[in-house]
Image (tube, rainbow over all chains, first blue to last red; front, top):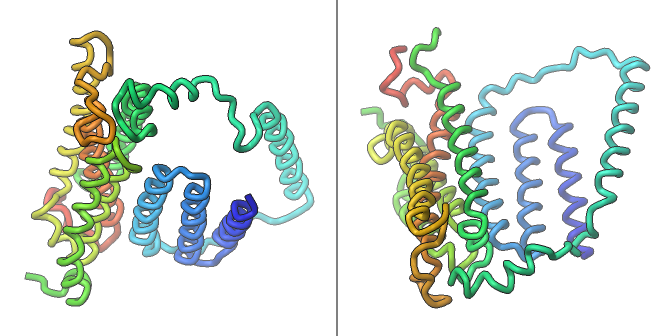
Length: 173
Length: 154
Protein backbone atom coordinates (compact mmCIF):
# COMPACT_ATOMS: atom_id res chain seq x y z
CA UNK A 1 0.00 0.00 0.00
CA UNK A 2 2.90 2.38 0.63
CA UNK A 3 3.81 2.52 -3.06
CA UNK A 4 0.24 3.59 -3.86
CA UNK A 5 0.59 6.53 -1.53
CA UNK A 6 3.99 7.48 -2.94
CA UNK A 7 2.59 7.54 -6.47
CA UNK A 8 -0.48 9.44 -5.26
CA UNK A 9 1.77 12.07 -3.67
CA UNK A 10 3.72 12.30 -6.93
CA UNK A 11 0.48 12.77 -8.87
CA UNK A 12 -0.75 15.53 -6.58
CA UNK A 13 2.63 17.24 -6.87
CA UNK A 14 2.52 17.02 -10.67
CA UNK A 15 -1.04 18.37 -10.71
CA UNK A 16 0.00 21.35 -8.58
CA UNK A 17 2.95 21.98 -10.91
CA UNK A 18 0.57 21.77 -13.90
CA UNK A 19 -1.64 24.45 -12.37
CA UNK A 20 1.16 26.75 -11.33
CA UNK A 21 3.40 26.51 -14.43
CA UNK A 22 3.77 29.44 -16.75
CA UNK A 23 3.31 28.39 -20.36
CA UNK A 24 0.93 25.79 -21.69
CA UNK A 25 3.56 23.28 -22.82
CA UNK A 26 4.96 22.88 -19.30
CA UNK A 27 1.45 22.40 -17.92
CA UNK A 28 0.66 19.78 -20.56
CA UNK A 29 3.83 17.83 -19.74
CA UNK A 30 3.04 17.93 -16.01
CA UNK A 31 -0.48 16.72 -16.82
CA UNK A 32 1.07 13.79 -18.67
CA UNK A 33 3.01 12.92 -15.53
CA UNK A 34 -0.29 12.78 -13.62
CA UNK A 35 -1.74 10.40 -16.21
CA UNK A 36 1.30 8.12 -16.18
CA UNK A 37 1.09 7.98 -12.38
CA UNK A 38 -2.52 6.86 -12.77
CA UNK A 39 -1.36 4.08 -15.12
CA UNK A 40 1.02 2.82 -12.42
CA UNK A 41 -1.78 3.01 -9.84
CA UNK A 42 -4.04 0.85 -12.00
CA UNK A 43 -1.24 -1.67 -12.55
CA UNK A 44 -0.54 -1.89 -8.81
CA UNK A 45 -4.27 -2.34 -8.11
CA UNK A 46 -4.25 -5.24 -10.62
CA UNK A 47 -6.48 -3.70 -13.25
CA UNK A 48 -4.53 -4.25 -16.50
CA UNK A 49 -7.56 -3.47 -18.67
CA UNK A 50 -7.88 -0.02 -17.16
CA UNK A 51 -4.12 0.48 -17.28
CA UNK A 52 -3.98 -0.22 -21.03
CA UNK A 53 -6.90 2.10 -21.75
CA UNK A 54 -5.51 4.83 -19.50
CA UNK A 55 -2.05 4.57 -21.11
CA UNK A 56 -3.22 4.84 -24.71
CA UNK A 57 -5.81 7.53 -23.95
CA UNK A 58 -3.19 9.50 -22.02
CA UNK A 59 -0.82 9.42 -24.99
CA UNK A 60 -3.64 10.46 -27.33
CA UNK A 61 -4.73 13.33 -25.09
CA UNK A 62 -1.12 14.47 -24.70
CA UNK A 63 -0.60 14.55 -28.49
CA UNK A 64 -3.93 16.33 -28.96
CA UNK A 65 -3.16 18.93 -26.31
CA UNK A 66 0.37 19.60 -27.57
CA UNK A 67 -0.72 19.73 -31.22
CA UNK A 68 -3.85 21.78 -30.67
CA UNK A 69 -3.17 24.11 -27.77
CA UNK A 70 0.49 24.99 -27.65
CA UNK A 71 0.34 27.14 -30.78
CA UNK A 72 -2.51 29.08 -29.21
CA UNK A 73 -0.45 29.80 -26.11
CA UNK A 74 -1.52 33.19 -24.85
CA UNK A 75 -0.33 33.73 -21.29
CA UNK A 76 -3.15 35.46 -19.54
CA UNK A 77 -2.79 37.40 -16.35
CA UNK A 78 -5.64 37.33 -13.92
CA UNK A 79 -7.18 40.75 -13.57
CA UNK A 80 -8.88 39.81 -10.31
CA UNK A 81 -7.70 41.93 -7.39
CA UNK A 82 -6.98 39.79 -4.36
CA UNK A 83 -8.70 41.49 -1.45
CA UNK A 84 -10.18 40.13 1.78
CA UNK A 85 -13.63 39.40 0.24
CA UNK A 86 -12.02 37.22 -2.40
CA UNK A 87 -10.08 35.22 0.20
CA UNK A 88 -13.17 34.94 2.40
CA UNK A 89 -15.32 33.58 -0.46
CA UNK A 90 -12.56 31.14 -1.38
CA UNK A 91 -12.28 29.82 2.18
CA UNK A 92 -16.08 29.63 2.55
CA UNK A 93 -16.63 27.63 -0.62
CA UNK A 94 -13.64 25.39 0.06
CA UNK A 95 -15.08 24.66 3.50
CA UNK A 96 -18.56 23.91 2.12
CA UNK A 97 -17.09 21.65 -0.55
CA UNK A 98 -14.90 19.78 1.93
CA UNK A 99 -17.80 19.29 4.36
CA UNK A 100 -20.15 17.91 1.69
CA UNK A 101 -17.37 15.76 0.32
CA UNK A 102 -16.68 14.34 3.77
CA UNK A 103 -20.37 13.59 4.36
CA UNK A 104 -20.70 11.97 0.93
CA UNK A 105 -17.63 9.78 1.39
CA UNK A 106 -18.70 8.59 4.86
CA UNK A 107 -21.21 6.13 3.45
CA UNK A 108 -18.78 4.45 1.10
CA UNK A 109 -17.16 1.11 1.95
CA UNK A 110 -13.49 1.17 2.89
CA UNK A 111 -10.82 1.38 0.22
CA UNK A 112 -10.23 -2.06 -1.28
CA UNK A 113 -13.16 -3.64 0.59
CA UNK A 114 -16.18 -3.29 -1.69
CA UNK A 115 -19.56 -4.75 -0.79
CA UNK A 116 -19.79 -7.72 -3.08
CA UNK A 117 -23.48 -7.88 -3.98
CA UNK A 118 -23.65 -8.15 -7.75
CA UNK A 119 -20.00 -8.68 -8.48
CA UNK A 120 -19.93 -12.02 -6.67
CA UNK A 121 -22.43 -13.34 -9.18
CA UNK A 122 -20.40 -12.01 -12.10
CA UNK A 123 -17.11 -13.41 -10.82
CA UNK A 124 -18.47 -16.89 -10.17
CA UNK A 125 -20.68 -17.17 -13.27
CA UNK A 126 -19.04 -15.12 -15.99
CA UNK A 127 -16.83 -17.92 -17.30
CA UNK A 128 -19.42 -20.63 -17.86
CA UNK A 129 -22.22 -18.31 -18.94
CA UNK A 130 -20.37 -16.28 -21.54
CA UNK A 131 -17.35 -18.43 -22.35
CA UNK A 132 -15.02 -15.42 -22.31
CA UNK A 133 -11.82 -15.70 -20.31
CA UNK A 134 -11.62 -11.96 -19.64
CA UNK A 135 -14.27 -11.15 -17.05
CA UNK A 136 -14.01 -7.41 -17.67
CA UNK A 137 -14.96 -7.87 -21.30
CA UNK A 138 -17.74 -10.29 -20.45
CA UNK A 139 -19.25 -7.72 -18.07
CA UNK A 140 -18.80 -4.87 -20.55
CA UNK A 141 -20.18 -6.65 -23.59
CA UNK A 142 -22.57 -9.24 -22.16
CA UNK A 143 -23.96 -8.57 -18.68
CA UNK A 144 -23.78 -4.80 -19.03
CA UNK A 145 -23.92 -4.40 -22.79
CA UNK A 146 -26.77 -1.92 -22.47
CA UNK A 147 -24.48 0.39 -20.47
CA UNK A 148 -21.83 0.01 -23.14
CA UNK A 149 -24.39 1.04 -25.75
CA UNK A 150 -25.00 4.21 -23.76
CA UNK A 151 -21.27 4.79 -23.55
CA UNK A 152 -20.89 4.35 -27.30
CA UNK A 153 -23.78 6.78 -27.84
CA UNK A 154 -22.15 9.37 -25.58
CA UNK A 155 -18.85 9.05 -27.43
CA UNK A 156 -20.58 9.23 -30.81
CA UNK A 157 -22.55 12.33 -29.82
CA UNK A 158 -19.50 14.11 -28.43
CA UNK A 159 -17.42 13.38 -31.54
CA UNK A 160 -20.24 14.54 -33.82
CA UNK A 161 -20.54 17.67 -31.70
CA UNK A 162 -16.80 18.34 -31.87
CA UNK A 163 -16.73 17.90 -35.65
CA UNK A 164 -19.80 20.13 -36.04
CA UNK A 165 -18.51 22.92 -33.81
CA UNK A 166 -14.98 22.93 -35.27
CA UNK A 167 -16.01 22.70 -38.92
CA UNK A 168 -14.67 25.00 -41.60
CA UNK A 169 -17.48 24.91 -44.14
CA UNK A 170 -19.71 27.94 -43.98
CA UNK A 171 -17.60 29.67 -41.38
CA UNK A 172 -16.87 33.35 -41.79
CA UNK A 173 -13.20 34.20 -41.79
CA UNK B 1 4.47 18.36 -54.49
CA UNK B 2 5.39 19.91 -51.20
CA UNK B 3 8.40 17.89 -50.14
CA UNK B 4 9.04 19.68 -46.87
CA UNK B 5 5.72 18.70 -45.33
CA UNK B 6 5.88 16.67 -42.18
CA UNK B 7 9.03 15.87 -40.25
CA UNK B 8 12.58 14.95 -41.31
CA UNK B 9 13.64 11.96 -43.39
CA UNK B 10 14.68 9.97 -40.30
CA UNK B 11 11.23 10.24 -38.77
CA UNK B 12 9.62 9.26 -42.05
CA UNK B 13 11.81 6.15 -42.48
CA UNK B 14 11.21 4.99 -38.90
CA UNK B 15 7.49 5.67 -39.25
CA UNK B 16 7.34 3.50 -42.37
CA UNK B 17 8.79 0.63 -40.36
CA UNK B 18 6.88 0.97 -37.09
CA UNK B 19 3.43 2.14 -38.02
CA UNK B 20 2.26 -1.17 -39.42
CA UNK B 21 3.38 -2.93 -36.23
CA UNK B 22 1.43 -0.45 -34.09
CA UNK B 23 -1.63 -0.95 -36.30
CA UNK B 24 -1.30 -4.72 -36.00
CA UNK B 25 -0.98 -4.48 -32.21
CA UNK B 26 -4.16 -2.42 -31.97
CA UNK B 27 -5.97 -4.96 -34.10
CA UNK B 28 -4.66 -7.78 -31.87
CA UNK B 29 -5.75 -6.02 -28.67
CA UNK B 30 -9.26 -5.55 -30.05
CA UNK B 31 -9.57 -9.03 -31.51
CA UNK B 32 -8.39 -10.80 -28.35
CA UNK B 33 -10.37 -8.59 -26.00
CA UNK B 34 -12.37 -11.52 -24.66
CA UNK B 35 -9.22 -13.49 -23.83
CA UNK B 36 -6.63 -11.01 -22.57
CA UNK B 37 -6.64 -7.50 -21.10
CA UNK B 38 -7.70 -4.87 -23.57
CA UNK B 39 -10.71 -4.70 -25.79
CA UNK B 40 -12.33 -2.67 -28.49
CA UNK B 41 -11.77 0.69 -26.85
CA UNK B 42 -8.05 0.26 -26.19
CA UNK B 43 -7.50 -1.26 -29.63
CA UNK B 44 -9.39 1.59 -31.26
CA UNK B 45 -7.29 4.18 -29.49
CA UNK B 46 -4.11 2.41 -30.65
CA UNK B 47 -5.52 2.42 -34.20
CA UNK B 48 -6.17 6.17 -33.93
CA UNK B 49 -2.65 6.66 -32.55
CA UNK B 50 -1.07 4.89 -35.52
CA UNK B 51 -3.02 7.15 -37.88
CA UNK B 52 -1.90 10.17 -35.84
CA UNK B 53 1.66 8.84 -36.12
CA UNK B 54 1.39 8.97 -39.92
CA UNK B 55 -0.19 12.42 -39.76
CA UNK B 56 2.59 13.84 -37.59
CA UNK B 57 5.39 12.29 -39.65
CA UNK B 58 4.11 12.86 -43.18
CA UNK B 59 1.87 15.88 -42.70
CA UNK B 60 -1.77 16.20 -43.56
CA UNK B 61 -1.25 15.31 -47.21
CA UNK B 62 0.38 11.99 -46.42
CA UNK B 63 -2.50 10.61 -44.40
CA UNK B 64 -5.23 11.82 -46.72
CA UNK B 65 -5.08 8.88 -49.10
CA UNK B 66 -5.16 6.36 -46.23
CA UNK B 67 -7.80 7.96 -44.04
CA UNK B 68 -9.49 11.23 -44.81
CA UNK B 69 -11.83 13.09 -42.51
CA UNK B 70 -14.87 12.04 -44.53
CA UNK B 71 -13.85 8.39 -44.40
CA UNK B 72 -13.22 8.60 -40.66
CA UNK B 73 -16.67 10.12 -40.09
CA UNK B 74 -18.26 7.39 -42.17
CA UNK B 75 -16.41 4.62 -40.33
CA UNK B 76 -17.33 6.11 -36.95
CA UNK B 77 -21.04 6.12 -37.77
CA UNK B 78 -20.76 2.63 -39.28
CA UNK B 79 -19.12 1.28 -36.12
CA UNK B 80 -21.80 2.75 -33.86
CA UNK B 81 -24.57 1.35 -36.07
CA UNK B 82 -22.85 -2.05 -36.17
CA UNK B 83 -22.77 -2.22 -32.37
CA UNK B 84 -26.46 -1.29 -32.24
CA UNK B 85 -27.19 -3.91 -34.88
CA UNK B 86 -25.53 -6.60 -32.74
CA UNK B 87 -27.74 -5.53 -29.84
CA UNK B 88 -30.90 -5.47 -31.94
CA UNK B 89 -30.16 -8.86 -33.50
CA UNK B 90 -30.39 -10.30 -29.97
CA UNK B 91 -34.12 -9.45 -30.02
CA UNK B 92 -34.67 -12.12 -32.68
CA UNK B 93 -33.70 -14.81 -30.19
CA UNK B 94 -35.28 -13.28 -27.10
CA UNK B 95 -33.89 -10.14 -25.55
CA UNK B 96 -31.98 -6.97 -26.36
CA UNK B 97 -28.22 -7.66 -26.34
CA UNK B 98 -28.78 -11.36 -25.79
CA UNK B 99 -25.62 -13.34 -26.45
CA UNK B 100 -27.23 -15.59 -29.01
CA UNK B 101 -24.14 -17.21 -30.49
CA UNK B 102 -22.71 -20.38 -28.92
CA UNK B 103 -20.29 -19.50 -26.14
CA UNK B 104 -17.68 -22.08 -27.04
CA UNK B 105 -14.89 -23.27 -24.77
CA UNK B 106 -12.91 -21.04 -22.48
CA UNK B 107 -9.52 -19.75 -23.60
CA UNK B 108 -10.24 -20.68 -27.20
CA UNK B 109 -10.36 -17.91 -29.77
CA UNK B 110 -13.94 -18.66 -30.80
CA UNK B 111 -15.55 -18.16 -27.43
CA UNK B 112 -17.74 -15.52 -25.89
CA UNK B 113 -20.39 -15.50 -28.60
CA UNK B 114 -21.07 -12.00 -29.92
CA UNK B 115 -18.21 -10.40 -27.99
CA UNK B 116 -15.72 -10.63 -30.88
CA UNK B 117 -18.11 -8.72 -33.14
CA UNK B 118 -18.98 -6.16 -30.46
CA UNK B 119 -15.28 -5.58 -29.86
CA UNK B 120 -14.64 -5.10 -33.57
CA UNK B 121 -17.56 -2.66 -33.87
CA UNK B 122 -16.25 -0.60 -30.94
CA UNK B 123 -12.73 -0.83 -32.43
CA UNK B 124 -13.87 0.70 -35.72
CA UNK B 125 -15.99 3.31 -34.00
CA UNK B 126 -13.43 4.50 -31.45
CA UNK B 127 -10.48 4.42 -33.83
CA UNK B 128 -12.15 6.39 -36.59
CA UNK B 129 -13.90 8.77 -34.20
CA UNK B 130 -10.82 9.73 -32.20
CA UNK B 131 -8.79 10.18 -35.38
CA UNK B 132 -11.51 12.48 -36.74
CA UNK B 133 -11.36 14.53 -33.54
CA UNK B 134 -7.57 14.76 -33.84
CA UNK B 135 -7.80 15.95 -37.45
CA UNK B 136 -10.43 18.52 -36.58
CA UNK B 137 -8.57 19.85 -33.54
CA UNK B 138 -5.01 19.72 -34.88
CA UNK B 139 -5.69 21.49 -38.15
CA UNK B 140 -7.89 24.16 -36.66
CA UNK B 141 -5.05 26.65 -36.44
CA UNK B 142 -3.98 29.16 -39.08
CA UNK B 143 -1.75 26.65 -40.87
CA UNK B 144 -4.51 24.11 -41.23
CA UNK B 145 -5.70 25.06 -44.69
CA UNK B 146 -3.80 22.26 -46.34
CA UNK B 147 -5.91 19.58 -44.75
CA UNK B 148 -9.44 20.06 -45.91
CA UNK B 149 -10.52 20.03 -49.49
CA UNK B 150 -14.07 20.91 -48.56
CA UNK B 151 -13.62 24.45 -47.25
CA UNK B 152 -13.76 27.40 -49.59
CA UNK B 153 -11.08 29.47 -47.93
CA UNK B 154 -7.55 30.24 -48.96
